[in-house]
Length: 249
Length: 267
Image (cartoon, rainbow over all chains, first blue to last red; front, side):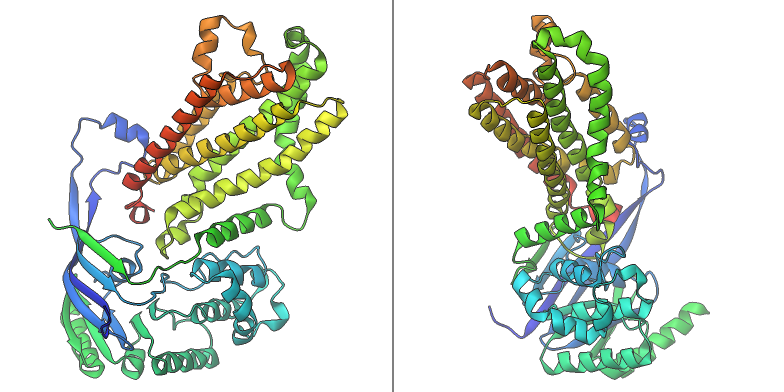
C-alpha cells in the first residue's frame, strides 16, 4: 500500500490507572491479596485522530500534562495505547530523546556505536557514517576520550549528530532545540531544512512557538487529552496563546 | 473495548543480533575498563569462597570424594557453575531497571536488553573456564573427553535456564521492588541445596532425589560425577532434564509476553 500518508492515528485513547495505594512490593501485594485496590483513571489521550503526510513537518503544542509526550511515546512504540489504531508507513525513528544509552564512562567513539545501534543502524552503516557523525559534532580531537570529560555542548552535539545520521523516514522529536549554543542551533535548523527538502516526515513536540512558526507546515494543539484544533501554524500559535490566557485566568 | 493496533510498514531494527552484541560488549567494556584488574574482581569472589570452603570442608568431605584434589576441583567447578547462575540471573533481573532509558525513551524489543545482560554474564563465565583449566593443570588432572563435552552441554543448558528465569524476574522486578530480596533468598537456598561443597552421595537416597529436582543441583552433581567418578547421567534423566528446561523456557516466554507491555509505564 503506497499512499502519501506516513502516520495515521485513528481513535487513539490511552488512560493511566493511578492507584490510591501503591502496590510496588510483593509484601504489600501479599498483604492486600483480598482487598480491592481502588484507583483513579486518568485519561492521557482521549479519542485522538490525525494524519501526517509524507514530508510534512508537524508541530505539536500544548500545555504541560496535555498528553503530548504520551502521544509521542505511543507513536514511537514505547507505550501501548488502550484502543485505537496507529499505522506508520516508512521507517520511524524509535527515540524521543537525544543521546539515549550514552554512558559517560565510555569514549565518544564507543558511545556513537552504542547509540547508533540502539537507534537501529547496522554495523556497516555505522562504519560508513562514523566520520561524518564525528565531523558534524565537531569533536574530532576528543572522540577517543571518555564522554564524562565532554562539555554539555559537546555531548548534545554528538547526540544530535548521531540522531540525524540515523537516516529515518519519520523522525519524532521531543524538545530538542533547547540544546547547544546559537551557532549549533543554527546548524540544527539547517538540518531541519535539509530534512524537509529530502521529504522526511518530522513530528516535533515543542514549547517554542518561534520554531513552530518558522518550520512547521502544520501545527496541532493538544489540550486536556484532546485535539483542540489543527492547521496553519501561525493561526494555531495564536489560538494556543489565547487558550493559555484563558486557562490562566 | 476494541483493541489497540500498532503497525509499521518497516521494522525499526533490522539486526537484533548486532543490537544484543553491542549492548553486551559495552557492558563488558564498562565493567573491565582499561584493565585486566577489573576482571580480577569478577573472579575474586568465587576464588575467595573457594579458598575458605576448601580449607574448612575438604578435611570433612574428602574421604567420600576419594582424594583431596577431586574435592577441591569439584568444589571449584561447582562454584563457577553456581556463580554463573547467580550472576546471570541477578544481571538479568536488574537489566530493565538499570537500562531504564532504553525502556522508556526509545522502542527496543525489551527481550534484547534482558538477553544482552545475560550474555555479558556468559562472557564472564567463559573467561572463568580458563581459570578452571588452570586449576586442572595445577592439580594435574585431565577429565575424560566425554566429561568435558557434558560440562559444555550443561553450560549451554544453564544459560537457557538463566535466560528463562531472567525473562520472568526482570519485568517482575519493575513491578515489585522487593523482588531482589526474594531472589537473594532463593539463590541462597539453591546454593545450600546444591551439592557444591558436599557430595550428594552422603545424603539418604530420598533426599538425593528431592535435591536433584533443583536444576542447579542436577547440573552440578552430574558434572562432578562425570569429571571425577566417570559416572554419567542416565540418558532418560538427561532427556527429562532437557525437556523440562525447554518447557520452562516456553513458560517463561509466555510470562514475559504477559508482563512486558506495561513495563515502560511502571518505570
